[in-house]
Image 1 (cartoon, rainbow, N blue to C red):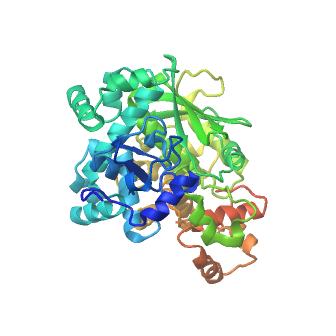
Image 2 (image 1 turned 90 degrees about the vertical axis):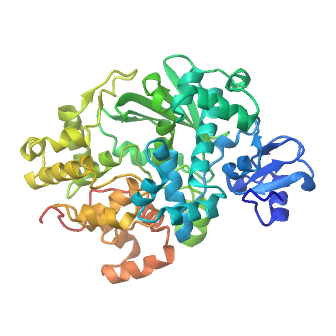
Image 3 (image 1 turned 30 degrees about the vertical axis):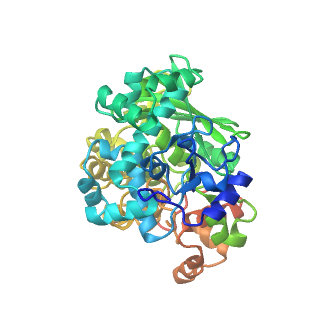
Length: 494
């Protein structure tokens, strides 16, 4: 066993999973082969080496820290993520989410720890316990694997790949790539498929089965915002704005290979890793359904593949939740379309249905509430949207995963017009908080056959820390799509 890696303690069980190529362990651990110096996913199609030549690591970063380089056949950068349920694991997962979004490309570990409301020492300890490496090493491995993925799956130049992956200089990228992988970036490019054209780039993100793609599309279709989103029976398309760059994406499901195929406009090339991270979040592909199904038990039997739809843009989802207060899903969707037509930015796309990007927090923070209310809502609700936009724009309310949830919930509910139901809905989707639970929701109460808060909360204790998933199963049991249209009482009366 190598001393500088985070080695899986039960190597015998790991080897049995490797022999079986058990997909349930894909992304849970990685296998380093000592005779080749290569590490693989447990589903790698290559001939299985003897157990005495295998070392098992809990993360790709730990395997690389131990001196292994990634396999070109099974491509460890495509392994699905892991879901954490314990307190330290949740912190590590939150940190990983922020690192995946490029946080350490812009801020220090100390600043990231402050965002997460912990000390830098505690953050380092949590990350090292979960992944076997420091946050800096985790970020470095993520950049390298992202670069490897871009070199293989896109036609971006090597310089564009370096900067898109988060490297500040091409020289540093080339040197680290050669040091870590013992090959030049151009060698990966020559081994790649080179299948993309100049106008769009194609990436993939894997998921673990079961995955109910059809249920996800139905949910998104009912809430698709005119001009921003378009959903067919097999495809999800939308416009996006990330770090000042505007473009579009199209997502389809490859059920054979168990990956989502993502076509991205070339205008988003410089932020391609962020685009993929947002799509993963929207479709909840990093989730391991096994522990969730085990905890939910009979509640999840009928629809084991249900996921909790996340958000490409947390602010967009939050506004959509406010618009849905006390109106039907169709009514809220209509008003959202008017908001986009009035305040969104026009954009050219290959599809006539996609015409605008969703208005930013900066834009709506400068709008008078009357200008919003004339679109078809009470003025107080328009004022709530302006207040939210202002709080998001100045950084008081960060609407993205990876932050401590309770302070964000408290800040949301401190705004006029946002009560617990809306805050919990935002936590479910914008914050990707798996334990969010809108206990006062009418659909939840109807599915449970209960009316009192204490009864609903008591029965939901058995589903922690996956109450958001339980909520979706309860809604599904009523043959209802999850909806922000039926909170129990007006929340804009503050």
